[in-house]
Length: 420
Image (cartoon, rainbow, N blue to C red; front, side, top):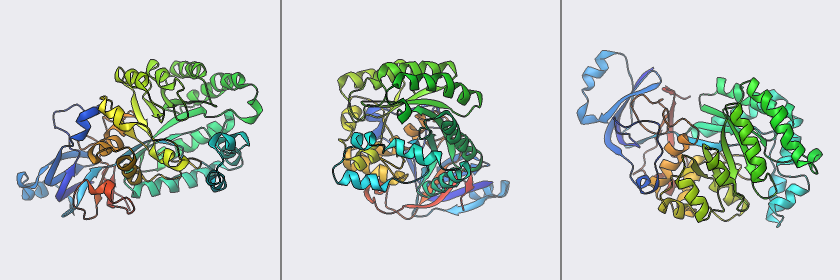
């Protein structure tokens, strides 16, 4: 399909046409977003073909070359789609009863000790068919799409047995084939220690390494490997063992780290060249220094801190130190039951004191980097996949996080196709 979006009030996050595509944006540079006012965007097949000012395009010439579908974006902004780099959206059922327990004052770890939390999701998933899991996850992806998300990373981790971890990853593989969103899969067998291994955590780590991982790799079911490295979950030493095993199977690391305590997970992630380290509510100078010397993307999940009532990550300190940041939804049934990246954008500005420009970079281009796809998605660049959304009439890009309750997206284009 050939599209021309014309009369765009403002085209946002435009790359220099000579800049390399596989990039992340760090520190002060995140405050400066390149935009074009009164712009056009040409899409040829599934790729961005050209863009610029309306005054620079010969519309008669363009439209005479071939048949273009025309979209008039007068008074509307065009953005690259959100790239949500951390979700657990393949799950069987909700956990609102635990939410009530939290309201009554019960802690995250206390709920886990009595069989709730991740173990509860694992039990529900075991009892749910693969087809039902697929249908529920597909519906969630469709809802996320209409909030402007065009790419998503999905983790396993609600299986905790070889059979059920493989079941989740097969569902993700099926979603990759049938969803219009770009999807990356992460093997997270080390999400929690299941009840049968409560007194033998080392034995469960051995199961992840020696049984789960070889089967995941043999079936080509994962792009990345992840470990929940935190207090009450997996130690830094156990995380190293699992990541080393993953590397032998060609899986790059992504780590849950420092949500509940200073776990050493950030340093382990840097040591093993993790693509991202995620959560990071507990961050000190040592963690920031380690990340500054790495290619690892720090990824913040404000939805989880908001829902659990945790302290927020020190985003301003990290940005002011010169780090890049990514933002993701952490969409899951226990600690962040929402895949609405517009809401995450607003939370970042309100709770992290991020500027709108910083939050947009974090949820788009840096989110793509945290999924290994910033060469293809996350900004407006020649040759990139045409994943963009057109807003309803809004005044400017700052309005996106300001108006936090409504959906500002009017039209979504994924892989060059207008979504229905």
